[in-house]
Length: 86
Image (cartoon, rainbow, N blue to C red; front, side, top):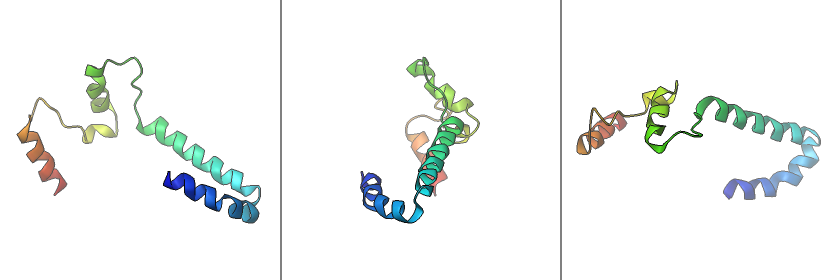
């Protein structure tokens, strides 16, 4: 909501200064967000909830952040996360 309010406040000022370039500006943001979704978010449509973790483990970017629950469970997993964060 903060960014929506910010855009609402600065839109007319940007429109006066950038004129038609403002639409290129917002178009570039839409392109950037589309690339983010296409590249960094794996498709989970029709994937059972039990298999979603496997989808994240197989993804080229997110697999380094996913912790295998079979290796460490419960308190051990929290200790491992705490060690990685520090």
